[in-house]
Image 1 (cartoon, one colour):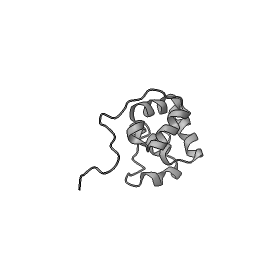
Image 2 (image 1 turned 30 degrees about the vertical axis):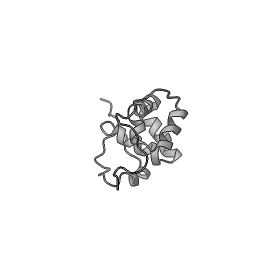
Image 3 (image 1 turned 135 degrees about the vertical axis):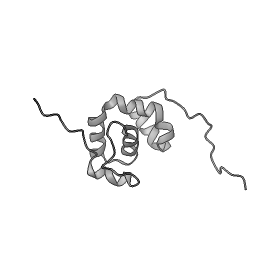
Length: 104
């Protein structure tokens, strides 16, 4: 009986970007959106290569279309959107308001 491959682990170099999480308990499949978001936002090129090798281009494109505009900084979202050729995406259900939220 062949040995099963262990699930891919989060690279130790990415762990500082998940300070509020127990990185040993992060699941590559269940926590994919969180891992993709943090890696696209803060990752080095080696970490980005790991991300694409782990999830694939289509899964990352799906994240960007569904969550990118809300979960990433605007400059990060537009960078990856243009790089991956995404022309349509889910826009937030509320208007973006610049400036203060509360009136003084």
